[in-house]
Image 1 (tube, one colour):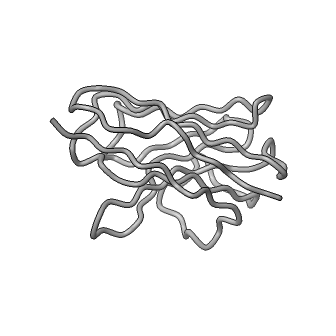
Image 2: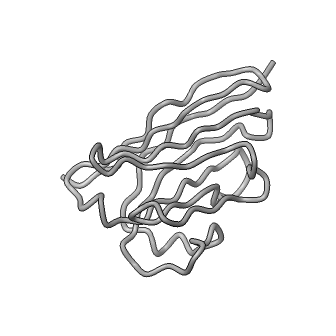
Length: 129
């Protein structure tokens, strides 16, 4: 069974950090481009960060640049999203998704969600004092 599983979400205070993980199984993780999306209550799902299959290209939404860092370890079939200096507006369900299509450099954060073949179930991130 092909699946992506997110983990690492939780409740933190503003200014704190979290590291999300996205682990794949039953799929060719090492050749997949990965994107982190998030969806806040009452808002549309938006792209947060992307990383290409070898990790040579990364990109971030303007709202998280300088605070979030995406990386991957293909030996562990895992992509990480290190989130620092978290703000209340980062509160959302975070999803990882994957596709194996071509992407420009840098990988685009604004991309049709229809391109993504694999999706995780999401992990909740809440930032509140």
